[in-house]
Image (cartoon, rainbow, N blue to C red; front, side, top):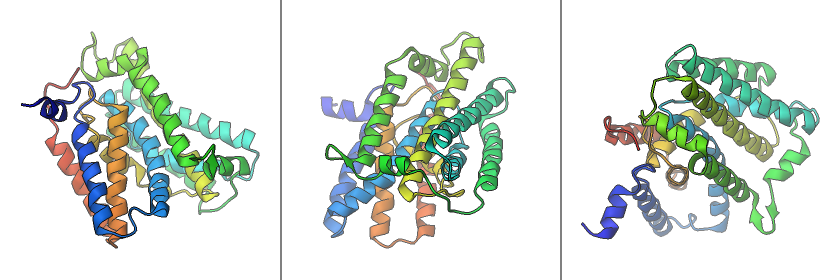
Length: 313
């Protein structure tokens, strides 16, 4: 096997097989550029970045939870709740900390349910998702309200020539990279997911797993802040698709849903690939219902190809 083939097929044992989705994404860009007149346009590129940015934000948090063999189905509800809080026609110094605080509470509830109550992550986060979504609907039954101008200005426009969604994505990726690949917490997350700790749900494991769920909710809240600024209003249903989309993107990026293997860059690649698929289908006038079917099939296929044994560092 050539050195290039070795890199493509093996990548990094801890980071997962992210090179193949990268090659698929590059090939997809080339194919869409050749088959559609609008794909390579500047306006479509801006739209693609704006669509991918919130998915990247949510998926980074989802990846952190999946590293510890968890799953967070409440991320979409957190996104919706965040837009609702920010659209309460209240000062930004009240709504912004309130949105982050609510996200931390949701993360703590998820982590406590999984570690202390020993509820399966799917059931625990599904339950918290229902509670969170209910609060979002009570707070903002229909789309509307006014988001503080400071939030709107943070999302739209440019800074030093850099498109704001790009800047948001760069900052989020750098922060996540430091947490996952450059800190003791990150090492603990990989170790827990790989089953290399002394006892299941020990004291250190509980703290780190709870921290993973809190980080997931906080990244979802940041995505909600971005979307609130983007649409300049609140929407109780805007986050509905992000639970499944984030899991699909994380799996596409080479993260093992069994835990212990994954990376920030792989997650970004998975999000980019999923955004390219959605954007391409939009340009080809594929029905939104068909797009939902395609996303479901992608998730099923990717998970079916993942190994169930020998997961670890």
